[in-house]
Length: 219
Image (cartoon, rainbow, N blue to C red; front, top):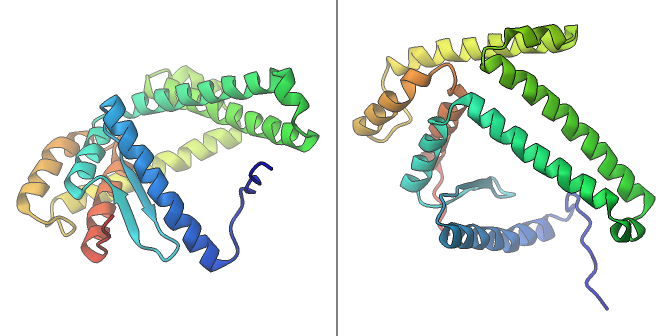
């Protein structure tokens, strides 16, 4: 008899939920280590346990280096890569839908779920394309947006500007989340020139440093 497929939903029993996390966390970290070694790549994992313990891979210095590399990737390039990943996932879903053998083994509800997911991904893909054109200077693409989309974009721009203004003030004061003056100088030199485009990434780095001060978790 084959293994019973685990239904993907929140595990209600707290003991079982903690046990499942502990087991799968080990497997996830192992897979990350294997992928990094086999393919000679940098990879980072950040997660919180069910009891809110910060867990990460790899070490503190290495993961900060990876975050900084991410910060140095232009926002337009990030959107482009995410769009490519979504397109690849779309192709995989379409291929799965078109596979007769797989389709025969799937129930109607499974196919309906895939169709809804495909529609959601296509909508997200279209939003990413619009944003990418704007970041590339194609302001004419605004004509293709409806009122609600324009309103959401306006709110997003206002939020980014508010964060940028707040962050500019922070960079003139002491680096309260850092551990040394050298860390601040390195961050300032590499990120300040990209302030408008890397607010979220910088906040991620600050958040990571702050949490490491109050929570230490060893693998």
